[in-house]
Structures are given as structure tokens and as C-alpha cells.
Length: 423
Image (cartoon, rainbow, N blue to C red):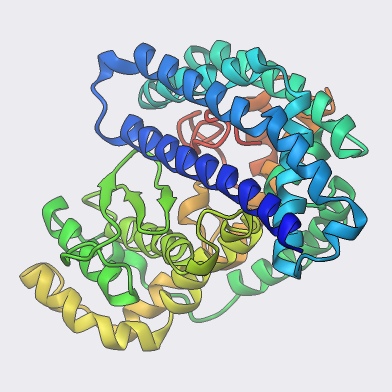
């Protein structure tokens, strides 16, 4: 018993080193999106590439393989409790997968991801997909190479299944397709019912201009209200501004970003609530498992359930705004002093097809996700090319949501995920 626990302890020490490195990579990535000067992008891409190689070396250390071999001997393995067994399983899963990926490929993906994100920001601002396309093509090609390798070690049916497994373990293209087909049918029917409703909200109140400085104060108040501390001496979070909102970090240092539009203040309201949901989930993982594989978020699906719970179940409820409306009016002073609670809550729950995913209502949001899934599935199945993405995207939005995409900034380039290599 003592020997197996000693070997297990050594394995967890290696897991801790890896978790600490990954947390540092996350903050360097955050800096790239928030504080890094424009000229630094080439240097930053090299820094991230080097760190990814170091992470790969740590993940594939032969000493880890030897520890796993000894720990997983039947007599030794059975001495472990369920949590310890799960940690061993997760370390082995990562070890088996990473040992199959060439170091140069890992480095190239990290470097290209940084370069692609940078050009995405510039191309989106100029509404120019062709400016973005060459870098995206390079990144997609690299990810396809990785997917083909991971497909074998993960024993999945398709390369895209291997990518899905990274974010949603054991989920498959077939399972998601069946679920989404059923979901689409129900959502479209519900959407039609909502559109025919005799009582429609007055959304003009949502277009009231609110100064950016005021919105920043509202963002802090919202975060603090739902339990995401960004102001106290013990704060483990902060709010910054980026083109696309995101959350990153680990336990005591989990940071969120948002964006602000003077004539659409609720865009920031709901992105802050959404990202705060992600952050609160991360900050409230069991501290007894910190630095262990089981101490990380278990899947993107669960993560998203927490963010959307804060954004929608809490953030669009009458009860929440009954409490927060006085604070909102106090912060915004004369700008929102005449806001009517009932009309406001009705307006923020409007159901209407839109072009932007992060601003979609609860009914149509799922259709945005289904569109992205279909495109990614076809991209990895060689049924669509990177060059064709804008056309496929625009057709999908017309067919699924009945909206016309005017330019690629509000279309295929609206999200950062593909630019960062997240498929």
C-alpha cells in the first residue's frame, strides 16, 4: 500500500507542475488579448510556442509513463480510492494522446493560433475575410493533422470526433447530430409561436445610450452581485475589455473580459453575467483537488451550463432585476432613471432571430450553435473548405434563422473560437 501511494504521490507532483505551467500559459494568453502592445505579436507567438513545447515535454515525460506502469499493476491499482483512480486515468489519457503528437506540430499549432487571433482582430475590424483566410487555412490544416493522429489514439470514428472529445469527453458526432436534429425542430416551432404572440416587448428602451465609463461601473456591480469579486483585497478576479468576451485562469486567479457598446448597454450586461458564471464555476471547484486532474473543469458543456445559468436563468429573471434595478438606476443616474421594471424585463426576454450568437435570446441561441457544429463537421469531413466558409455561413443563417448577413464581421468572423484553433 505504501509503495503504490508513494508512486501515486510522485505522479501527482508531476500533475501539479503541469497545472501550474498551464495556468501561467492562460495568463500569458489573457495578456495577449488585453494588454499586449501590437508590435509584440511575433514574440508572443514564439513564447506561446515554446511554452506549449515545454507542456508537451512534461506531459510525455518517460518518467510519467514508468510511474503509470507501476501504479496500474492490478494489485497496486486496486489499493487506490476512486478519486485517485480517476486521476490516474486522466493522466494516462493525456500521456497516451500527447505522446502520439509530434512536438513540432504542438509548437506550430500554438504559434499559428497566436498569429491567427491577431489577424482575426484586424480583419474583423476591416470586415475583410480574405485578409483572415490565409492564416485560418494554415491553422485548420494543422488542426486536421492533429485530429487525424488523435483519432487513432482516442479510437474515434472520425477526426472531428477526436476534436469533440477534447471538449466533451466521449461525446460523438452522431450523438450530437441526433440531439441537434430534434432540438432544431422544437426550437423552430417555438420560435414561430413566439413571433406570432400578440404582446411583443418594446425594445427601444434597450437602445438608450449609456456612456462606456458608466457601463464599466455597472459591470463591476453586476459581477459583485452574483458573487464574482473584482474589488476587495481578497479578489480573485478582474474585468477587462476585448473584442470577444472570454474567461481564463485557475482557482484564485480567474479573469473575465467583456465589450461595451454605447448604444447597446445590455450587450455588456449579459456578457458579464455569462463570463462571471464561467469564473464562479472555476473559482468554486473543490480546493481539495487543486493541481490534480480531477480538480479541473470536467467538460465544456458543464462549463457552459454554469455561464448560461447566470446569464439567463438568473440574469433575465424578474426577481434578479427587482433586486438590481435600483442599483442600475443609481449608477446610471439620469440616463436610466425612468426605466420601468416590467417593460425592461419583457424587453430583455424578447425572442427574435439575430445574426450575433452572444446576443441571441434563449430560444434562438441553440440554432447558432447548431449552425457552427454543422460547419465544423463538414470542414473536418472535407465537405467544406475554409474559402467557402462565408458562403456556407450566410446560407445557414438564412435557412435556420431567416436573417441576412451583411458582412463577414457580423458573420463568419464574429467569434474568436476558430481563430484560436478551438474546433
